[in-house]
Length: 524
Ligand SMILES: Cc1cc2nc3c(=O)[nH]c(=O)nc-3n(C[C@H](O)[C@H](O)[C@H](O)COP(=O)(O)OP(=O)(O)OC[C@H]3O[C@@H](n4cnc5c(N)ncnc54)[C@H](O)[C@@H]3O)c2cc1C
Image (cartoon, rainbow, N blue to C red):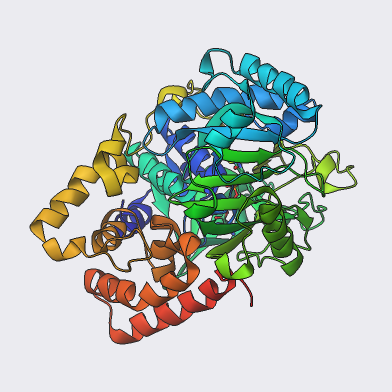
């Protein structure tokens, strides 16, 4: 997957595309794969990097959503559990089974959550990741050696999925290209094209690297821009009202010693009524998330001090070793693309808005798919292309994605050690290291990152900037913000060599990265 090849395919393309998908997050990438794998001629345009917005900032769970069960939204849970099973089957190198323990401090919590988890097991049916069960006090402490023991009665264990969101997004972009699609990052849609009768029949796109603008025609245009969904809807009709209700969620990242062992902690109800997770991930612990209504969509949402205080305090409440702000290695925030139905914009606060997805086709034929969650992207995409194919007047073809392997698919990727997340690409990375042993250099002892990953990201994963490498091709920025800042000049140097860039480019890249990365450090 190379950007130059994508640009050449775009330049050489004659006639309208069947579909243009705007947005390279989970929803847009899923929709693009869905279209290309059915044999439709499809172009995907992403204004920044793949998964730059919400899709790299999730809690990294492939889950049915225990919370939606509490809310009684059984159909959403059923759909998500089905998709959870499919995703684990289609991307086993990135999706893993994880044990979650709900610690019980009150007498009623054991039976209450025990029954809830049995319902969860039942809904998962044959796709179950493992049976839930009650744990006595000793068993709970065995799974969670650092859980606060004062007042602890026992726990309930259940199983769900965990993944690497940005890596999955990159592998999805590669899958799309392998299915015959054309993908370009750093290509922003600035306007929509319309036929004389007002029907949306293309986009105006601006290359963010060269500033070049081009008109691109399509039989149908699909808006999959997450928190930016209303900006595209307004290009179609400036009078439409906003449907997005942005709610920010923040995570803090701690050293693994705060939660050793293989299980995660799930607190069903914190002071603000939210579910709180503490999850082992990439040899760190991710604690999150909050839910704060914010004014508007932001490409780089900044965690609020009160969210950070809440997370540090709550982590301390449930762990024997209380973290201080100095223990926080990184912080990251994302904005949930919660949407009200354009035909029914009623709900009064964000917690009332359904986590279901909303598919809408405007009077001018703009298809908008929004809401939902990472776990359900494939079902959202299938629904979207079913509708969009009729609208575009192309031959109807059945979906094949339920069994389509995602790029990197490998059933035993753990055998590749440090490169396990690359799945079937891992032998090629190892091959590069064999050819050029210097590429085995670990760039910083605080980060699980080798020079070869930078080279691979540039050559095969369309990484264009130091931030693309440190934030999404590797997850260094989320694992240790300060270490990422320190390693940025070396990453820029390796990239410049690969891409034929000069010292000025390196300096610019490092400066831009540091500006972003400073907001991933815990404020002092
Ligand atoms: C804190 C938090 C935790 C979450 N945890 C989980 C979880 O554990 N599990 C789960 O299943 N879900 C989770 N979710 C939900 C999930 O992350 C989102 O539903 C999903 O990532 C949304 O993907 P998207 O593609 O719709 O939006 P985005 O990822 O925001 O993608 C939209 C893309 O459109 C691009 N774009 C916008 N305008 C333009 C334009 N004019 N031209 C070109 N491109 C454009 C943007 O740059 C962006 O990349 C979480 C969400 C949050 C906020």
